Length: 141
Image (cartoon, rainbow, N blue to C red; front, side):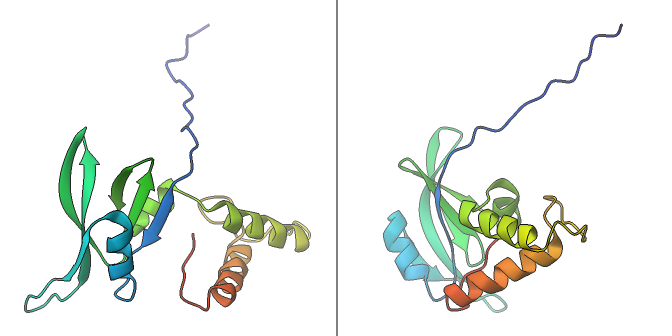
């Protein structure tokens, strides 16, 4: 019998507060995280960003969180995630519950699934529902 070298690990689950930066909400996001909103003014780049204090390797530093990225608060510290990193790392419980309800209503049909095992059609319907509820201004996983 060969001893396995593979170990199973599970990420600790915890809740965070998070907001995705847009040109419309940058000032409010900056106020929330104690940062400053600004616009990069260069010839080919005029993106909005929020300058925020983050913790990186146990040290505080200031970093720019550009529009489209997420600022995440856990306890009293902030981190910046690019959209793809954020969506890979975090999920929204309410959104996941809506997807599960839609899949259940579909009768468990074996439709195409995404990388999370959720039916693509159910995810699209859930996005439409959240868009209606949020006035079409909020994106979800």
